Every structure is written in C-alpha cells, then in structure tokens.
Length: 322
Image 1 (cartoon, helix red, strand yellow):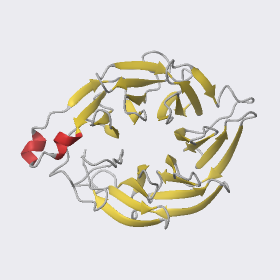
Image 2 (image 1 turned 90 degrees about the horizontal axis):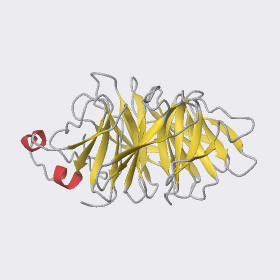
Image 3 (image 1 turned 30 degrees about the horizontal axis):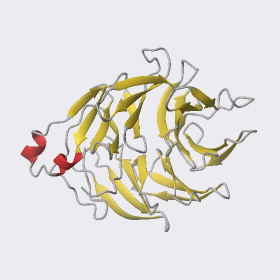
Image 4 (image 1 turned 135 degrees about the vertical axis):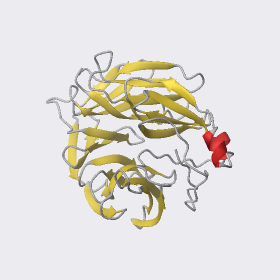
C-alpha cells in the first residue's frame, strides 16, 4: 500500500506498507478511519489505521507497523463501503464458492464481524464488483462469470432484480465488471469487458439495455456529479480512459494515460468530479503508477510513479483531512 498527496502527488510514506499477498483493491471507511485492502492469495482483508500510518515517519516504522487481518474466503476481490462507512462489501472471485453460489462478504467495520450473502440464482456465476447505493437500501452486483447484474436488498440479502431473470427475454452482459447507479436509481451503467462496451440499463418497466462501444476491456465506471459524463477505465494497451456523453449515449473521447507497454487497471473520481485518478500497470519488473486526468479538459495533468517495481491496481480517494 502506498499513499500519495492528491494535489501534489508527493509520496506520504517513506516506503510502501506490506498488506498481504495478492493485494488487489482498497477502500476507506470514514466511520472507522481505516483502509481495507483485499489480499486474494492470503484470503483476508487487511485493515490499516490511516492516521497512525501517516504518522509512520521512517522505513523502520513502516516495517514495524501493525495491521489487522480479517479472514474472508475464498479470494476476496473488489471491495466497497456503504455510504455511512458502517459496512464493507467484498466480492469473492471464485467460480465455486464454498456455499455453491456466488457471494459477497459483508464486514461490519465496528467489530469486523463477517457474514456472507448469495448474489445470483446462477450457481456458476461469479461476483466481480459491487455498488452500494447512497441510501443504503440496495447493493448492485456485476458478475463477470454468468454475464449478469443483480440488485440485492441490503438489509435482507434478497435478490430483487437481475438482468438474467427479471428482464424478458433475459439479457446477457458479457463479462459484467463494474456497475454504477444514477442517484435517482432509474439507470445502471455497466462495464461489459467481454465485448468492449458499456451498457445503460433502464430500470423502469419495460426494461431496456443500450450498448456503447468504448474500447478494449472496460473496467471502472464513474459518473460525474451532473451525471452527464461517464468515465471508463480500460484494461487495454496502452492504458486509457474513455469519456461517454450519457445524454447522447455516445463515446466522446478516448484518452491515453500512460505510454506504450502499459495497460490500465482501476480508477476513482474525486468527489467534485474534477479529476480521475487511474492506476496503470507496466507488467512484472516495470514501473506502474497513477495518472491524474482533468475530466473537463480530458487531459493528463500529472503522473505518479509507484515506488520501485510493482503492479498498482486498486485505488481510493479520500477528501477529508487527517
């Protein structure tokens, strides 16, 4: 784990903190004040006290830093907090979960108690990423195996909607990677990695799905506060972001964010919608980093190298001061 100043790009740690093998994604609970990182190989989520971490002034302090380990199995993958920071939703990237069904884990940040919830009626599906709504009543889940998006009642865990079963005839979303809902809850935007598009799912009956081509292997999807622009990260080479006009339903621009030989990963938007911070990978032995992109001008304004070699992937933006 590395921490950067979001304005200057300055590294705020003397060296990266070890947080577990297969470290994949990260989120921060503003309620607990902790960062939570999925460590796939270790089948755990690592909890890090952010204030204490930022007080670690030397490499020796980093080496001696104590983290908490929360057992989550199998293969904790993507992670998102509820809007109030009370709960964390962790998808399990296994084709054959122990329950025989695709699941996400729910972690209570007040006591780190873990429960599990089934996300699809298709036992062969795999939950890839989640999107908890602002009001906390619904959790949307994108399944990259099974090609569907489902909606679950957050309190009960009941499946209340699925593109594979609710819509008639059922609609397949090829390798649904990530999903974001509009504030009004009338539409979903879904990255379809399998066919290089984003899908707009209209949730008012009769349901309708529109497709917009955005490039190779789209992943993260982010709506600006006006919801007039959708920004999409691409896993293709070179690393890039796509910009979609949501009103016109059309691709506006594709912006490379790193040089030849790089490919994109995950991205996050600042709360005001001004910037997107996107990780890019330069493969094993290469130096990946973070590209800062101005959403209004669609231009890269900064790039930050990850210290040493590494493959940066998950990223989180925290507006609040320490």
